[in-house]
Image (cartoon, rainbow, N blue to C red):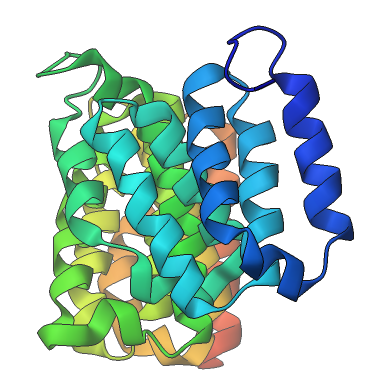
Length: 286
């Protein structure tokens, strides 16, 4: 009743969260259907999606995979009802909290729909898709990091299908996305690299980053590119060493940049490369 009147729903949602927290698994299982109904109603009655997410996580943490899949299926109704904000906020929270446990439920196709619709601030299609892209990228970053700890099983399934799809759009967003979206895409590319496992996978990713490093029209794009490379080199180290020769000429150019931050990032990249290879790069950079 308290949730049904549409006013002041945050208080009863908070009460529900505390009830779920105190309840045992058997209690939650017995009222699972009703709780999920209340959860879905909560998403439609308040804009405080994090409060709804707290309730969702409280329920999920008490139950198993079967119940998680039921909740995920119900969350799909939010997206189908054009409540993109609630759907992607919940998805990002599940990725953050559950990590690799959530990956079997995480679909790449809706993610790709949002990423491909973003055109550097020029709206194409529904406005909501641009409004939620940073939340989508946040959730994707959590998913990719979890996948990296899981040997890239999610990205590499079906002949690296998800990896290839994501790389294409993330590389584009790194160039076109501006400070916020481009920066978030860069974080995802670093996490995507950790989900890779071979030069065959890393080579096109490295190409996308070098393209950003050489983007003449915008120093901010070059900065994002070299920052990503630095983090990948630090994370993967020797595993990435065969791609270092492709990077050196670009580092040489970046060391001549007017922007001091870009020069510093380039020097850091060179330092990591020297540590990884055991070589002195001075002669290559002269």
